[in-house]
Length: 142
Ligand SMILES: [Zn+2]
Image 1 (cartoon, rainbow, N blue to C red):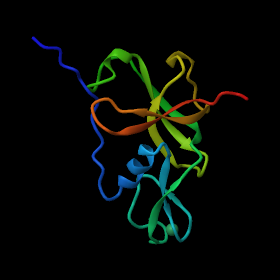
Image 2 (tube, rainbow, N blue to C red):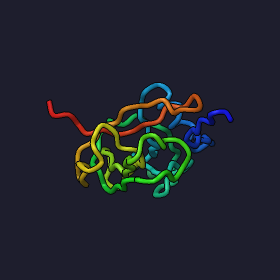
Image 3 (cartoon, rainbow, N blue to C red):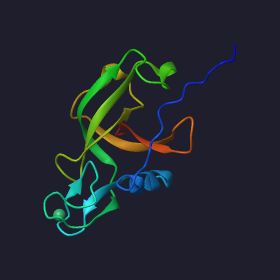
Image 4 (spheres, helix red, strand yellow):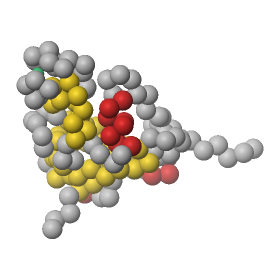
């Protein structure tokens, strides 16, 4: 029997999301934004849901506040099985109220995670492919 390495599911970029993955590949976090009214859109859309303006991906600061989270104690998807328990959260980005990105939370014991904590993006290579994914860690006080 050979060891089977279980990799996490890989992204499947489409016309609406490829800008996001192009940015992460370069170490940037970019979100979809209306080029007319400036509204940030998540999930990304081809046209603004308010004014129907054209959209494009723009870089964001990469800082935000934890809106909600879960701690995963049992293997639920392939990959990350050696990393249990781990936390997955919805990060409300500083750019706009309600602009929330689901990611893993790293660099902190899951028992110490609380809502409203300040987080900042870091990038990790996703095992099993060429993708780079954003994850969030606590903001280090300076
Ligand atoms: Zn708009």
